[in-house]
Length: 130
Image 1: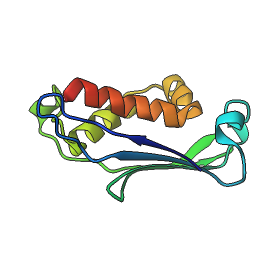
Image 2: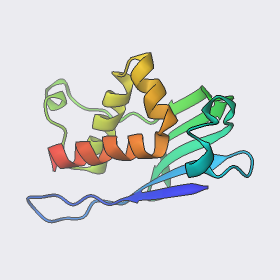
Image 3: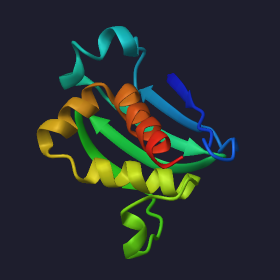
């Protein structure tokens, strides 16, 4: 298992938001950082993003293809889409929207580097909105 902890602080209030935990769990004993780039087409495993023990995103990957994906959606008003609030819900919504706006090529590259790509999305949303 490969785990990344993403910590975000509100620039204005200096308040720390809960830590986002990104987990990349292979079904076998593959060395993720070494093997994934060359064996992406045969990868089987699970990718999870959680905060405070709550799963926000979960993808089941079989033979390098996302077979199932669950993203917990948070309600945001139409006007809040211009700028997301500096909260866990706001940052998660921002990252979810960026994932949902990807075309299949962008999604493929993101999947190939899943822990780093998703960490980048969450960090970017945190930076822009906090």
